Length: 191
Figure 1: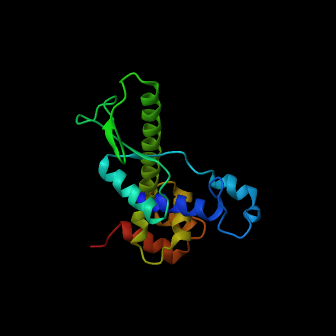
Figure 2: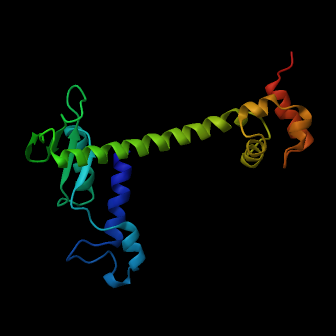
Figure 3: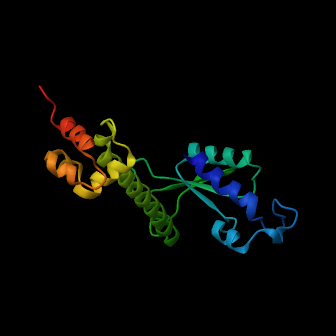
């Protein structure tokens, strides 16, 4: 995952937003639209990696593979007890170090990390919830994405679809009698 994120980000930067004093991938750096450079952002002064020496080494290898050696990386690992305030900072060519527990920089880095975790966990939960909602319908023959959406939009939940009568299923937009019968039979096995 780290490889995918770092490669995507830095390949975009290499292509469209040259570092200060360098030319873009095209003959004339002014050919790149201003909106493109703004959307990609500028070259980072520092890349913070959530993890210790192993993750830092992996990130360094990815950037080295792209020919980027001058962007500093720092890995931030939680302490042995995973306590906030006990983070260890790792940088290539430097001994690991810690900041004082009440250091404002440490608080800032902790908030960055916590926000990144909150975003990642929220995104993952949203995708999982969406997958679970439609997973039960995926097993029914003749039900494609459009009919799944139609059923979920009409009934709201998979549980409501399971409980629906044959007549209710037939009233759902985009669902014909044969499809309604297939859904009804799927949730009420004969025999």
